[in-house]
Image (cartoon, rainbow, N blue to C red; front, side, top):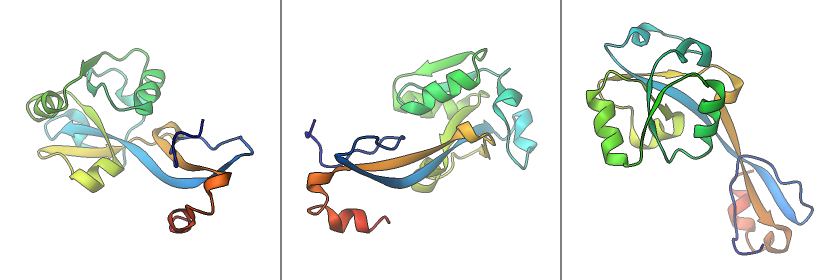
Length: 147
């Protein structure tokens, strides 16, 4: 609609008036307390291996919520809307939760926990940068940095 200069969704644009390019990737990880049975795993886990557990889930994880609910339809999620409460519960609870490689990179790994990658293709998202073609020249210094 022309109200934003740059939009970063997880799908490429199909519109002719939008310049779209891959911008980055994010991988979903499992966060388990060191005392959890899965903490001894070294290579990662699959959704089917962890579906039987209950999970703490932060309500504002964007598209990842749909991914985990689809991959783990039988799982009981204890949803938290408040970020501080969610973080507190991950520190004192025996329940696993989710994080991502980007969260670990920018905020660090949770203390007292083991972070394991989810191995399926669905646990990785590619993000795309969308710029209206009419603004492409003006935003060239930005998008050239990422190509």
